[in-house]
Amino acid sequence: MEIADNSVLKVLERTLNVASRRASLVATNVANVDTPGYKAKTFDFDAALAACGEDRMGGMEPVRTDPMHISSNGRSRSTSVAINEATDSSPGRYDGNTVNVESEMADLLEAELMFSASSRLALKKIEMLKSAIS
Image (cartoon, rainbow, N blue to C red; front, side, top):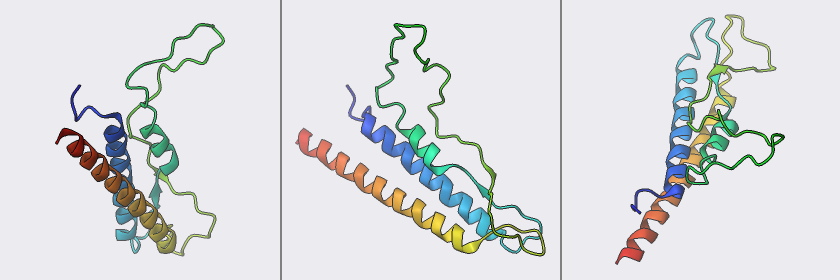
């Protein structure tokens, strides 16, 4: 067993990637706040985070013992999610731009908190591994 082959670290790595992608998407939206006709982009952060934890069984797949069981085949285990135009209930601006800076800053804060928490957990996990070795 390799130390780097740790399922907790893999999930934390994926969580860091999702939080980073979300922050990047927010930055793109904020950069285009004055672009006429720009439609804010988003992705389902919760679904992307849920996808990070799908591989908790270490690559093992459940066995279907009955034809009525739901198949686990075909599920995506990557953190790639579809980026869509944001659906905002507030009326758009006169120039057709749909970026709402306040909601973008809230999204950025959520991504930053998730990134910070995940990186701290990864650091603690690495410290535990170092302690076990020495």
